[in-house]
Image (cartoon, rainbow, N blue to C red; front, side, top):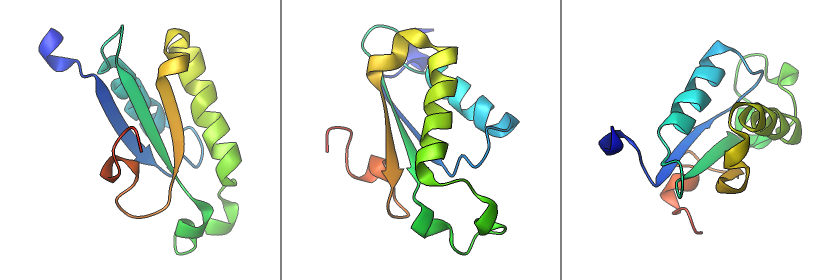
Length: 102
């Protein structure tokens, strides 16, 4: 139903390996975006924020994690390519706290 679709959707995470939970989150995010003019903002945690995470030394670098997210989105919804932004999360509030056009 149209009421469950949004013009702006934002999700975030570490995305340290595209496991089932990440795929599910991104699939749900894409399916919540209005098909013609909706946008998706994906925040990916910067390396500096992960120093206290378990097995931090095994987490791929930010660029590699962003590329993995964009590859997944590109395969899932190629028509969304120009309406998806993938940005680093630099603080605990992430990009949604800054607004979509910031």
